[in-house]
Structures are given as structure tokens and as C-alpha cells.
Length: 116
Image (cartoon, one colour):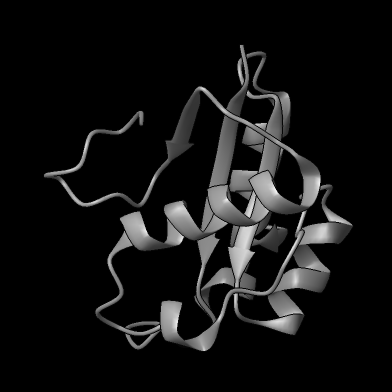
């Protein structure tokens, strides 16, 4: 069974600017999610959806896949997380013929099921 671990990491955080690449402890914040995803026995792919080149570079250096840069229209303050998930699934399906049965994403709105 294929389970995609998707990590949304927007460049333009308003609350804590640059939070995804800020050092927490001894590594960037995004590294914790990537490492946990890669350590999971359940995820078959760990991908980062970002609109930022710096986030992309850091994510790759920690073993995360960054198959695309997210379009700016999907990286706005009010962009629904489900739109980010659907974009990633569509991209992976078209470019890698990657199909999934489930998606694990830690940023879905409370009204959206955690597993699609």
C-alpha cells in the first residue's frame, strides 16, 4: 500500500518569518518532520510542498523529496491545505505516475479527514 507523507512548508509565514528553516535545537524546524517521515515504516514517499528555494535546498539536504516548487497561488495565507494536497497528488501522478491510496499530512484543517 502506498502512503504519501506530505510536508507543506510555505515560505511566507507571517507569525514566525522563515519558521521552516529556523534552527530549533541543532537543526532547521523542517528537518524534524522530514526525519520522522523517513523513519516511518508506513510512508512510502516523503515529499515537501514548498514555494521557497531555500526551504527546498534544506529539505533535500535532509533527505526530503522536493519534486516541484508550489505555485504562488497555492502559497497564500488563506490557501486551503486540501488544495496543496491535491496539487501535490496531481503533480506526482502526472510526472512520476505515482499513485497513492492514502496521504498523511499534518496541516489539514480540522474539518478534513487526516487520511484521504
